[in-house]
Amino acid sequence: MPGQLGYDDTPFLPGGKWRVHDGNRPQPPVVTPADVPGGPPSDAVVLFDGTSLDGWISVGGGPAGWKLENGYMEVVPGAGDIQTVEEFGDAQIHIELCEPEVVKGEGQGRGNSGVFLMGRYEIQVLDCYNNPTYPDGTSAAIYGQYPPLVNACRPPGQWSTYDIIWETPRWHDGLLIKPAYVTVLFNGIVVHNHRRLLGYTSHRVLTEYVEHPPVGPLRLQDHGDLVRYRNIWYRPLVGYDED
Image 1: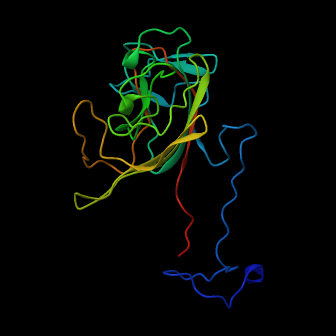
Image 2: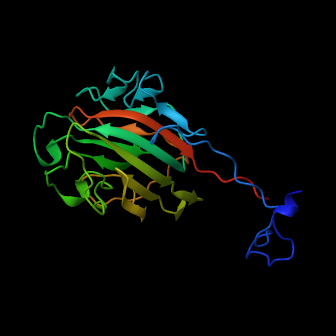
Image 3: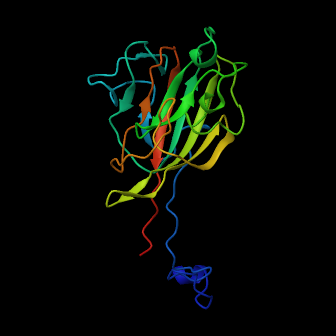
């Protein structure tokens, strides 16, 4: 019996119906990790596995116009941003990216792209390996708001990873009751720790919140540079029902 796993004579936890070490409390669901680091676990929704762009569309409408080869997709300059057909809210998101091996430009003109959560909130993609720029526009910055805690860039031509924990903003009767929060690991290093966003992504102006649906797509930016992406997946962050 579940009660044999714990105790039924311990104090109740504040604000709930479960006791300390309560054996009747629901067990966490089992999720099987991937066989390789960075791979999608058993409950992940795979957004891009390197074989097809069927799950992506152009932000301007129509099929995604990026190049697909060798297990990755690559920006085609001028094709425009692309986004997932799938929409989601709170999530754990994994993305792998590679800056162009042939280095061109400097500052914001080198390996520029972006990962837009819900299509609105940008985690910057930029080749900042020995390439300084304004800090809130550097690689892994929350663009226009917060620089990363550290510069964790690999050299261009090497694959890097973003692991993102995303909490969507909430509204009630048109009023913001909870801002968005994000935690970002860049190449396994924490660069944002539960950072509170100031609003949607903007350029050269103060940002703000504008009410939007509780779910949205993952959007990747065409900024004119040949940035590559692969192995993109997410896990919805929903708890099991304890009622």
